Image (cartoon, rainbow, N blue to C red):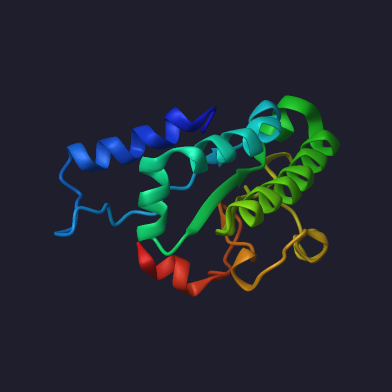
Length: 161
C-alpha cells in the first residue's frame, strides 16, 4: 500500500538497484500506488500531489508518456470503515485524484482491486462502473481479484509493462 510518496519512490529505487533500466537510463515500469485503507484513500490526493512534485518521479513519469496508474483497493477499505464508508471514500478519491492529474497535466488510469465477495469489493459492478467519475478514455476500470473474468479496460496501459 502507498501511505506516502516514499512507498512509490522505493519501487523506482529498487527497480534501478535491480538493474531494470533501459539503455537510455529510464525504468520501463509503470508504478501504481495502491490506496486501499480508508486513511490511504483520504491521503491519496496529497500522496499523488507530493509524488508529482518530485523531479525524479516526474522525469520517470514523463518517460512513461505522462500516464499514472493508481490502484484502488476495496477489501481493506470495506474492513476499515464498512461498505458505505468504503464506497464513498473510493468515489471521493477518484474525483480528487482526477483533479490532481488534470492540474499536473498527466493522464490517470485506475486499476480497481475488487475481490469476489461483497465484503471484498466484489458483486455486480455494472452500476458502480457506470456511476464512477471517469473523464477520459483510459480512465476506465480494470479489475483484479477472484471472481472476475473480465478483460482489460485500457489495452495500451496493459501492454506497456
